Image (tube, rainbow, N blue to C red; front, side, top):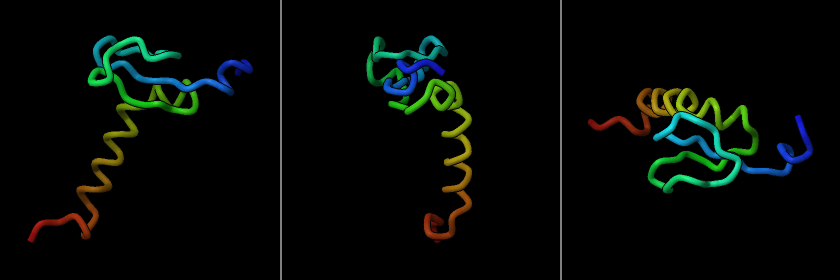
Length: 63
C-alpha cells in the first residue's frame, strides 16, 4: 500500500462500478468515503451484510 493510499479517502462509484480516489461522480452515484481502497471495493458487499444484519435485528422489527 502506498503512502497516498494510507492518507486518502476512497469512494465506490455505483454508476461505473469503480473505486475513485477523489469524488468524481455525483454524490447520489457513489458510496463512501472509505479509509482504504479495499473497503471501497467491497462497498456493495458491506452494505448487503449490514442490511441483512439490520433485517435480523429484533430492535428494528415491526410488530
